[in-house]
Length: 426
Ligand SMILES: Cc1ncc(COP(=O)(O)O)c(C=O)c1O
Image 1 (cartoon, rainbow, N blue to C red):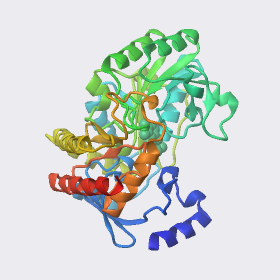
Image 2: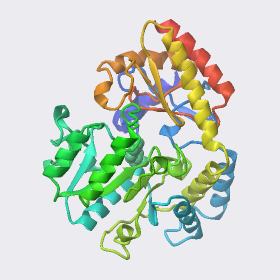
Image 3: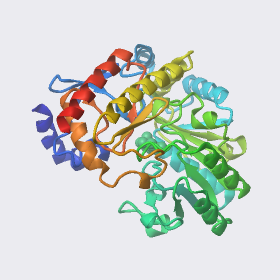
Image 4: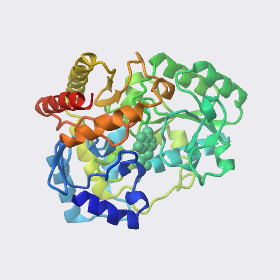
């Protein structure tokens, strides 16, 4: 197989043969599929095999691969220039469009990734509050910023332990971690560190450890307590932004974060991140303020025009309703199928996001609700689906993404493959 050959070559020049760990098919007992082409909902491998893609580059492709309007915008951009390193009208137009549709964003700065957006937002929060500590939630992922690569030891709220080598103890000690869905634990840690917490950062729709949909009242309380403590509330909407609606979870919940971070969909498949928020906070950023943050390729004109074409299309009537209806039908049918089986699976859905759990917990709200051997259940299903031309993200804790290109027909075909796959692995 060609992918095997490419993987062997790749392992010699890149760690694990990949450029981001989750692409590595770790513990799956085979090489990753190497893809050469994408069109709509379908990816084509180097072997020429086709796969219905539910990973969609881990979220950016809300319109599917190579959407014609995005492609046109990119081709137009490339015919003019692909980087200026100077002021340009495209980032201005895009920023104006975003500020118009995001009531909690007065001002924003484009960067190159979600990680950069988070790193910069945290810096602003520390500068504004003149405090050092950041509180995050167990199971939420905020990119590979040193201070965010920290989790609670054995679920003990408020304790810090680095979850990556190379993160200094000093850095890790400025991050406090509390469990999701536990307002008492949150309140206690906030009280104990009241004078020191610069910001509380949360994925308002945690989607990096399965799909852990939080209770609205819980999130409202988190927001209330954070603001009462004069800490900044940062919503990390790198996944949920422009995915669950134009104004993301902040809009859905009616909660105003002080700062918000975006990525993924915002670049229409090109590298973009963005952080933004209230005027007083964003005016702290260089060159008008003391918080230094810069980027050679920031607001790259190709990415700006791809992102703008994507968001413009999302603004059209019924895009989110269509995505939501299709995802809810698809997961509903999956759940009907699962109920007929001895083994318990459960499809969880929010907007066009879904996740397949391997037990029947009523509400998955924290990583503790996920069975410990979840990957052992998921991996054979993933491999069987792959054999049948369905590509989920190659990791049991990653969510699936529907795009507008996932039509009813595509989803029905997927359901048939799921039915077969489940029969064959049971
Ligand atoms: C919620 C969240 N924040 C931040 C990031 C980091 O974004 P990037 O991978 O673009 O650096 C991710 C990436 O998946 C994410 O899901």
